[in-house]
Length: 358
Ligand code: GAL
Ligand code: CA
Image 1 (cartoon, rainbow, N blue to C red):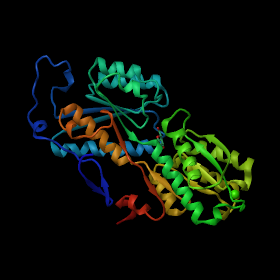
Image 2 (image 1 turned 45 degrees about the vertical axis):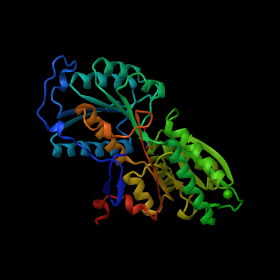
Image 3 (image 1 turned 90 degrees about the horizontal axis):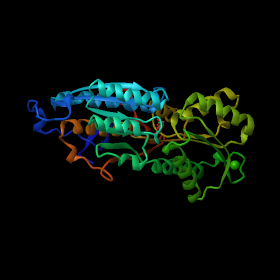
Image 4 (image 1 turned 135 degrees about the vertical axis):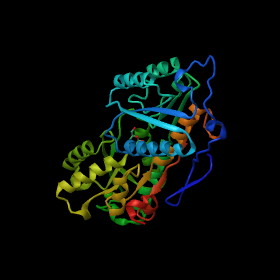
């Protein structure tokens, strides 16, 4: 990764590197196929994402907009247009067409259906508009369809392993997690969307890691709640009705669903001491707050700042033709940001200065 930048005492992985070339006056290149990028210091980014009700993505895109604004200081005029696909791939395909017609120089696409990017890729290639896919990883073969396709995200395996390690640590250090004292941990899982790379992989790795750490597990049930807090509350209410006080651990594929599970317990009439342990993934603002308040035993940081910064750096570089050589890719096209474990011990490092008032 390129350079270091400090935020909240954390080492960031990306830095903005802008060469002199992009600050030079715009040059008109004869025979240039692409009309809209005559000025290399103007970057219009078109974004479409699968659903505007997604907490993590909203926070990521907020960071992304800030990062793009920062390029103004370096003489690069950036504008961004963001569209919500509202869960429909057809809508998203239309949005891509509209964004290209509106003159976007580069697209950032969070696919609705990660297995169905062909129409979008064809549109982009026909107009020579590069695409940075993010967060919902297309199948590898699809990314090979054209050389101006990239992906920015995080390594799903790692998030599951980290969640499993956090849960193992708690179980080993706090005898009260095994509420009925049978030597086994009775658990339920709240899963994200079926077919999403982050859902099944997170669950498998979390459970596998706990087993490898010698934790005896008994799976009671799992429910799909599509990353969504309200759905998770509803599913958790069903699980509580079915299993009552047998549930000792709730593993959720993201923070919003872990929060929905806590919501269900708050409505259940159980006393706080009787609640199971809850683990999420993401470290969203509300997720971090839940760690601070002790309603989550832990979560895993999905580095939205790092991902947003990588997306901005890549999007700008693809248009200005400057800086791409300074970026590090896996298999020539992929950027994965690492996750981090969060407990009450280090949660302060992840809170914004504004929130902590420091
Ligand atoms: C995951 C994230 C979820 C949700 C999902 C959407 O990486 O943990 O909270 O945002 O992406 O694709
Ligand atoms: Ca038990």
